[in-house]
Image (cartoon, rainbow, N blue to C red; front, side, top):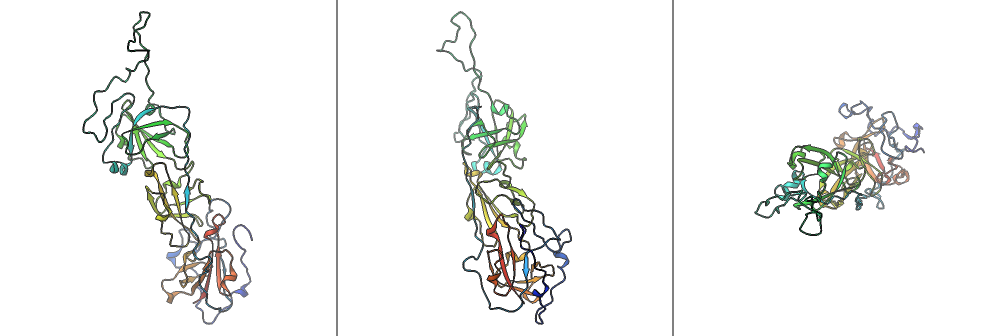
Length: 396
């Protein structure tokens, strides 16, 4: 047996004609063909991301029964494939050498501002700031360059000079470039936040766009991946920031109908991928929570992937479903189906139009003995064996 599944037995004696069975259709209906005109999906699996299906390749190993057998049900020791929610651990990222304790204005996406109830105004580099809950506005702004150094209030040079030593904090908003990353201190309800340059890893915010000539935080609303925006009252520019859940991960941003794939563990990066056999389709997306129980997990091939951030505002839960070779992968016991000559299965419109019926299934791969003489079909993605199956069926 190679890495792509069992070799198909070409002995036609395993597929005898039965007088009482309906003829197998020679092909799928026209509306069931894929966009390439292929009648069914092939399988191609190895270690790593799923490969595009080969229409000419072998499908699931299908075995036609040579006779009737006693009725069986679901395997009590297996049943529905187990779901293993992934909870991605988050770690504090050490701050880099550049430490800039400058306060900046915090901006959020539209839903963030709706939660706060208005735009928060903050100051930076020596600017007075009014609290968002205070009815008073900011007072007169002191000269941002008026901070001095010395041993007392008299800054006159003791040797007769009038020069004073001045220190101005650097403005990270003014110095930032696209691709830079920052650690943002404070939560979404804070009036003032601090931003410090940091490594572009888990938990950091990456600058994905810069809007010049404005302090309007809504300037980033058009940026699709913008999670929050910051500005300062010293520089007229806005930084559009994207949250990094795991270094290299893009699945965090996947929307309904998109597909994702990655290693079968708890902390590795997943990426948005093609919707090939073996990949996972996003069927639900929940923002602001990291809870696998939010997913129904009521169908074969379901699993959850969760992202937990320091600030729960950035938590995400993805409800996923694996893409099986055909409808048989999702079929429950007693489901009526149509078996085509290419050994692919499809849900029947009704049992009157079906030619086979599912009589049992197990999550074990190549479990022909479980079917006790019935026809059977088996499939497995080696990267996710918990979503494999052997389905037993009978002529109908």
